[in-house]
Length: 222
Ligand code: SF4
Image 1 (spheres, rainbow, N blue to C red):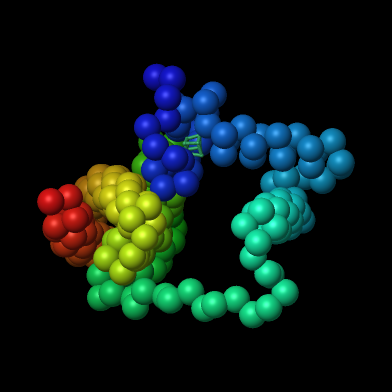
Image 2 (cartoon, rainbow, N blue to C red):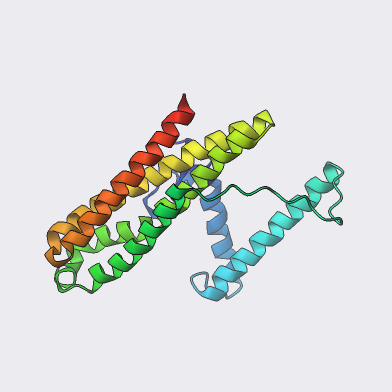
């Protein structure tokens, strides 16, 4: 596999260690070079200090790019900027975030259960899958709804197309994350009987959210 199918910012789940495109991904390459740079400066990239330094440097880069483009297009940045309209939060987004937060608490219960501690070696990877995806699905669902909203409310054709693409690709990541969550929870439901009922409830909730998101996607694919 040599080509990344879409721009990583809306296609991927950012789980680089499991990704087949690291060699060709600019996001990954940039992150690796930032890490090396930090290490060369004596800053550990895996600490809060390192993380904040990366965020700071990325903001700087974005600011420089914006200033360059503003100059190029004759935009005056000294005056107040026009407010960007924000899409209203949908019921589906709220539901997804509430589910994600419950999964966060459920994850804690799972990791503290006797059954998990006894089988940790076998269940560790499944637990990592759940931890990675339990909120990601909600974040990507929000981004998907935002993209669809842009598509419906934009007048510029290029922005409309970008909104639609962002909506569909982000929804795809959200759906894959929900499937991974359900798979992981299905395993925990079997291995941790005291939590089975609660886990099954969340599996059903994820399935319903997924179904609703798939309906939104299919109405935009027509
Ligand atoms: S390498 Fe990482 S950032 Fe790039 S597409 Fe894969 S998961 Fe996404």
